[in-house]
Length: 141
Image (cartoon, rainbow, N blue to C red; front, top):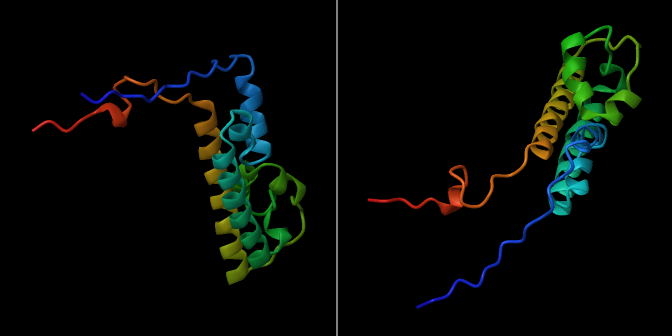
């Protein structure tokens, strides 16, 4: 018989009063929520991915494309990028063109991706043995 020597490490549950703070921090600095939760590799990947998208968007369209007065729906998606979008918010006339369109798309994708990462940081993982854990399920024929 083969014994299973794997051990499940149990982490202390996150204090429910601290959860909103994790959400705000994860929104302001992409990946910071995962960093606080101890998922450092995931936090670095999130930060690098979201910042890459955001910076490429700024390079393509300029800083004037983050404009709440001109493109409200685009700004709503962009603001989920956190501090980078809040810092670069302008009221300057942004003009038109392919660069602006691509820049808005990239920065909005960065914001929406960060929103998904914030939700991921706030929702606890499934417990081992629960029905949601795909690792425990086996295909029965």
